[in-house]
Structures are given as structure tokens and as C-alpha cells.
Length: 192
Image (cartoon, rainbow, N blue to C red; front, side):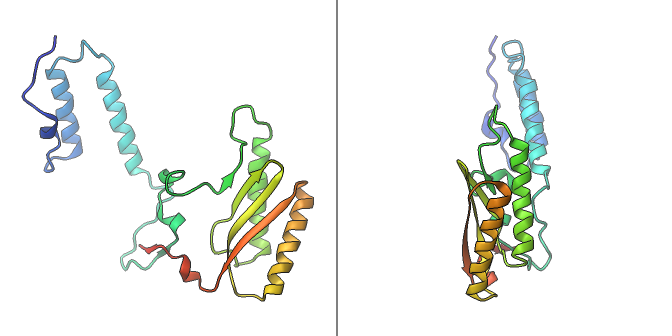
């Protein structure tokens, strides 16, 4: 039986109430309207949704704490929350190893980590951005932004050395695409 109620949704969204008070008022309204016999799973699904929203808001992983002086520089990738991966920012590894039935998915993840460690050691303190790894068929493409602190001849040597060594180790062609910048402050998106 459907009974109309005098409480509207706009009454539930009053700004002076806390979210938990609005939620309990919503549950009371649902019970007062006698929707429970009609929709038995509604209360539990609303409670589950509320718990999920609260858990997402309390998640601190991958978020940077705001400093008192707001002098910590963040790049665009660091400034976006992990929940925005695929929305505002992309993944650092692009491959199809996570598809159902794909063999060697763990080996590809280990290879990607090996590539990152190898580049961090070979290009010591030169990469300013995250290292992006894309796999197209059998080809591995590596990208990133590098600081212009050494001579161009050394960059070309490091490019050839890294491509050749990784191609022999991973048994697939490796291509490195880098961009250079003179000032590392050019990558700063905002300060927190």
C-alpha cells in the first residue's frame, strides 16, 4: 500500500544537517511510506551505497596531505586522485594482460616493474615524470619527460643503449620516446 508523505527530497537535503542525519531521515521516510513490503531490498541497498560512499571519502591512499605553507609542488598526475584514473589521467602501463584468459599477465607486470627500475638506474635523476609503458602487439614503447642537464650526445647514447639492451633482455623491440625540458618547474600543476 502506497501512502503519500509530506516530506520531500528537498527537505532531506537541508544544508544544516549532517549526511548521517539526512540518511537516517531518508530511512525513516522510506519506512513511513511503507515501501518495505514492496521493495524488501531497498533499505539494505541504500545502506550499502551509503557505506561505500563513506569508505571512498575516507580513503587516503594516493592522496597528498596539504602542507601548512602550501609549498609542496605536484604534477598533474599527482594532483588527481586515484579514483580519477581513466577519467582525467591515464594508466602508467597500457597492455592487454588483464583481460580474461590472457596468459603471462604476471610476467608482464614484472617486466614493467623491471623496465621502470632499469630506467631509473640508467637515466639517474633525469626522468621528471612517470615512466609510461605501452605495449602494441610485440613492440614496447616507453615514454616520459626528461630534464636537460646533460649533453645531447649523452642522451642519444642513453637512448640507443637502453633500447638495445632492453630489446635483447625482453626479446621484443623497444622504442623510447622522450620529451625534454630545461626547467623542472614547468611540470608543476599546483601547490598544496
